[in-house]
Image (cartoon, rainbow, N blue to C red):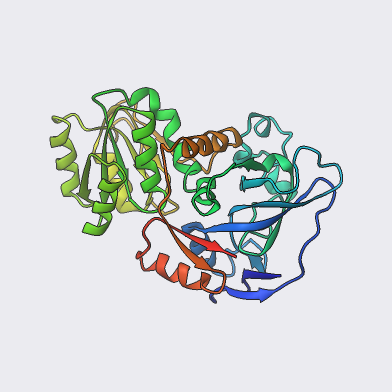
Length: 344
């Protein structure tokens, strides 16, 4: 079968021929219908050799959707032909954290060498992929796999980030979304679907600001120092109740820290080097700062249900497997609208 693999440190990924895998006991073989490209992939491929820990060659793609093609011994919960999405952050399934469905925080995954597809295990940018356990598959019904596959990260990650803040996002409150890209445009929609707050989006470039308005932002502002005063003005001087930073560099986390009020939330979602200094004289009283990772299995079921109801949708651009390297080039150049999806 054909697969997109990262084969050498510092070199672009390439399409190669590799053997089609067969499912072992407890495993599921999927015929891949769609695979999502993510900034996390770009981050991994930018790491120097002394920091890279994902194995080579690596079949990319931690966002996956497909049709069940074959079942390993002992798998009775699924039927061949079922359309599914893949829950990516695999855990052991039996530690205290995994038993809550939060396998992204598995207590023993690192020790046991359990890694997500596309981030250590073979990923979804191939004609077929192995999923280690049936619990990591979520039926998608008649959802278009191209639209469904980004839900496994671009939908799940902002959902997990936003959900704990929902009790604070009451009518009259304001949430700020920094970055209206692949995850941010989903964050805007999730906030509008699940709360009554005002949503303010920050980004650079009128195209991104227009995109933010299209997907539901009440206001869209340039992401620079002027945004702090603009948010204060929009909120009558009070500031934001929650800021969701989908960029995560120091410039954006610094903005977040300046535009919140007491008892607010700052949630750093983007994979960057940004941080917020928390202390009695640095952040408003009882400000909570979180840096969540991915999401839980139950939450992926909820995100899929939101999409099936029509409350959220993912903007996508599709690429063939041969075109997949150019998807990462477009991502790096920030010319993608929404998410890039590879269709094998």
